[in-house]
Length: 98
Image (tube, rainbow, N blue to C red; front, side, top):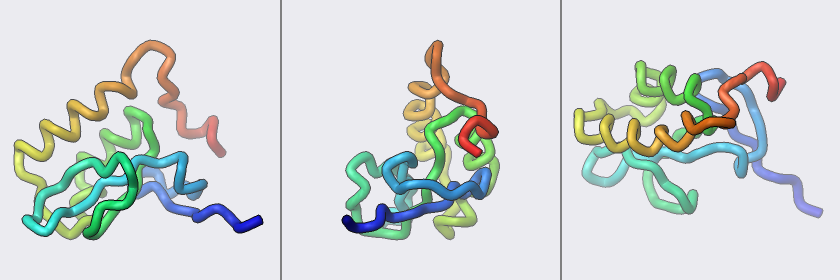
């Protein structure tokens, strides 16, 4: 059995299986967008699917990891994607993963 790839959340710096993260990629045009399949070309960064990690990521960690300045259109698209994590019953407690 092959070991599962490990990744680190750019916001909270916790490690975990790649499948437990959402990948955000810098496109060839220098834009930031969610890579739902996890296979898009470009520099990628990983975030936990939690409101806390997305808030921290949007505050600057994501821009640093992707080496890009996110324009407002990219920020809006990422915020819209993060809305699904704020639904009732969504897990936003990072310490629960430790």
